[in-house]
Image (tube, rainbow, N blue to C red; front, side, top):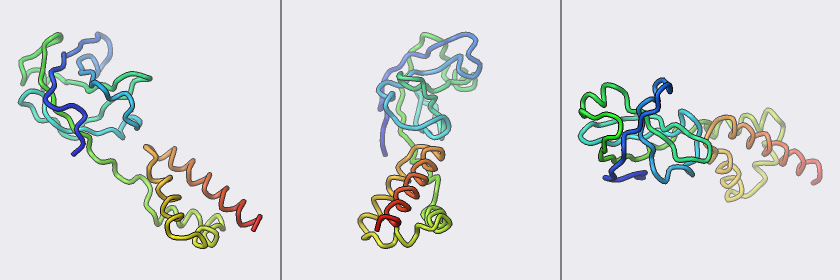
Length: 157
């Protein structure tokens, strides 16, 4: 389990006019966690309240935030400015693209033979480059770059 915060006191923040994000927690040291909206899921506790599979909201060049809705605040009896004790861990990201799908793309592009001609270590490394991307858009870009690289290699020998 990869903890983001463990048994840490945080202040419940209030920003009027932010919709669902009016009440939230700023999660310290989360700025560099990769991922876009919907791809950073956390679970844990806020005081004695269990949170499961909640989204952390990215903020440009800042720590991420976790919304604290009315049901949670009512359960805790807390309001803006109050301190809560927080433990959160990151849930593993689902694999956005499966290996079979990548291989099918390589086959469709006519570069699967070039990919398969590489040794197993190189093939694993190339696939890892695709799977390590935090979202489908970046995975797609890596697949296209892989196809271009393999296509170039197959034409240059």
